[in-house]
Image (cartoon, rainbow, N blue to C red; front, side, top):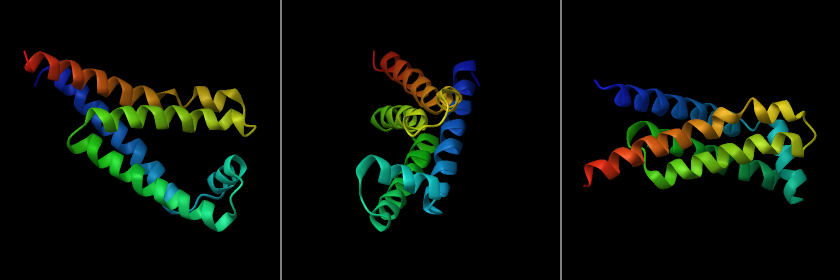
Amino acid sequence: MSNSKIIEWVLRIAVAGEFTGHGILALQGKEAWIGWIQQFTGIEIGTAAILLTLIGLLDIFVALVALLKPLPLVLLWAAFWGFWTALVRPLVGEPIWDFVERWPNWGAPLALYYLTGRRNKISNR
């Protein structure tokens, strides 16, 4: 197996693990996350909990796609969502370091996007 294929699989597993973990936490109704949704949107707690459940399901979908067939649009979404959810931390009053420590949450899907996109461009020539 080539080095780029090994790197691809490491990234696929990493992204899948990250989004599965976050998805499960969201489906469990992580209290702090419900509070953050309320803080940003002004919606009531029940609606925030439903929204968090939908986010959890979407995260698990992203995990499965990243692992089984990394689609460019899904990987770009994962990078955007990973960046946003990392950025939320200092926006809700947590230290900036909570944002910095989560750089892999958007960096891994972005790296997988570029790695798989580059290979697809090469194979389409």
